[in-house]
Image (cartoon, rainbow, N blue to C red; front, side, top):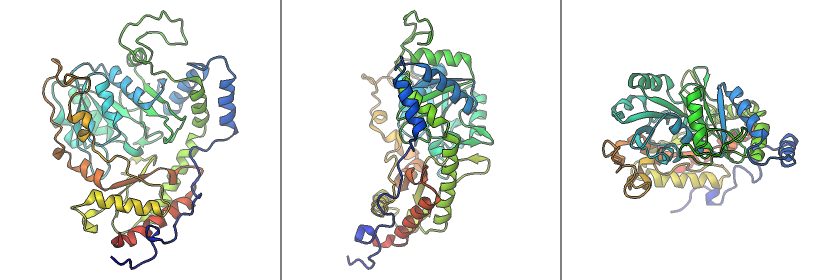
Length: 422
C-alpha cells in the first residue's frame, strides 16, 4: 500500500517527542541519598528503625490506626486475606480485570477466587454484578482501585454488610486517591499498598498493610513474620504459632520509602496537573475514549489509560491486533505507553487449569463448595477493555510537567489523525 503521508514516525517521519524529553522516575535528591546512606551506616539492615518509623508515618499520612511494612504489595494482599479470616475453600470476589496479584493472593491461602466483570466506563468492578457471585462460601470482596480511580465503595460496603462479608481494598496503585472525601485504604476492613518502582510512592520494592482493627493486625502480623506472634522489634520466642511467611521489609528500603513519602503530596499534585493538561490536549480526538473521574471520586492518576473506539475506527473484528498497531505507532512517536495487561484474569492459565498447588487444589479441596466457572465469555466488559486499551505512567510523573503532558497529547493526536494509514 502506498503511504500517502510522511508524518508518522513509524513511516519514517519525525518523532513528535524527542529522545531525552521524559525525565526518569522517581526523582532522587540529596534527602533520599542521605536517608539511605544513614541507614547503610546504621547497625540494623534487616527490620530496623526506619521500618518502624515508616509504618507510623504512612499510617499517619493515610489516616489508619495500624500499618505493617512489607516486602511487596502482593505480600500485603496475602496478609489481607488472612486478616479477614479466609480459609481453605472459602471464596473471595475479585474483579475480572486487574493485576494478577489481586487474584493470586487468594490462592496463596488456599482460597478460591470468584471473578466479577468490570464496569467499562470506570474499569473497576461492577457493583451490580457482585451479589449474583455471592455463595454460602463467600468470605470477602477485594475492591481494586484500578489505576488510581477508587472503586464504588458505598455500594460495595452495603453489599458486604448485607451478607456479613469483609472488604479488602487493593490500593496498590491508588495512593492518595479519595472516595467522597475519604482516602482509599480507610473505608474497607483492611488494605494493601505497593511501593514498586512504578508506583506513585516508590521505594524500589515494598508495600504496606493497613487496618484500623487490632485483631486483623495480629492475624496479618503472624503471617508476615514466620507465624510468630512477636515482631522483630520485640523480645521474640521464635515459636511458630501458625503457618507464616517472611514478608518483612528491610531498613534500607524503608529509609528510601520514608524520604519519598515526605514528597508524595507534591508528586500527587503534579500527577493531577499533568493529567488535566493531557486530557485538555486529547479532548475531542477521534477514535479515543478518555478515562473518567465520576463526581465524588478523586483519581490519583497513577496510570492514564486510553481506550480506542474500535467501532468508530472500523476494527471491531480485529480490535486487539489493531490496538497493537496503534500502540507501536505511538511508541515510534516517543509516547511512553504500552498494553498493561493483555489477558483478563480468568483467562490466565493458573485459573483455567484449576491446579494451583497440584491435585487440583484448592478447587478440589473437600472444603470447596462447588466448581467455579471461569468461562471467559461471561466477562464481556473486561475483555472489551483488555482488547482496546493502552496506558501510560511516565508522562504524568514528576519532575515532568504539563509541557511534557501536552507534548504527549499532541503526539497521540498525530497518530489518531492518521490512524487510517496504519
